[in-house]
Length: 295
Image (cartoon, rainbow, N blue to C red; front, side, top):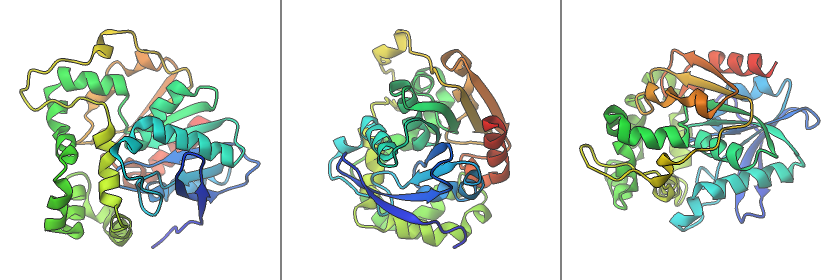
């Protein structure tokens, strides 16, 4: 397996122990990279060595993933818990402020962290991760996005693990990625994924991120009541923000970019010819966009 990183086991006061890839000079500016579903720090395997040339890089396996702690309750996976882990991780390494990067669920946590902890997050980089207001709104305004998000309803089904057990992890791997990327992009990583997913309790813990989320995903054609917060003003992101978007994403459609600039006043958008897993589908483009923007 190429690009294997030193992992530190970090005990946090939030009650979890996270495996964290650590690279670069601790005296350099800090950058923290958050992965999403169904991955690990290895989402960033191409970016970590490059960013470590100029930054102190932390890339945790978030709670519920790989060999990090897997608390038992669905309520242990509400987004505020992961924001708490993030801030505790920065505290552990005595990092006052930092650049935060997030992909997929990691990006969802990054959006929330930027909104709730602007005292700690100086700059924000989002990679194919929907803004909470835009995403929730699209569940009611964009039938195509609602249809593309039906997998969330499946993941929330308490019997979904039984389905995975019935087909086996290798088949779940094939189904997870064949729809989203050229299999050649990910074939070399298959053993790493199967090892991470095969850790005791991992699949349930990973799925609990979806089960704990407050996002409403109606059925196709369902006449559902939009959440009240969609009718109220939503606070803007205060940090300078880089949004990198793989335009071929089949799970998060281009509608996720519509109106984003009004919610993120200081936004730079870089569109990339890639699918959902853009950090490793188009690694050079992602790394270059980050480096150029960081200056």
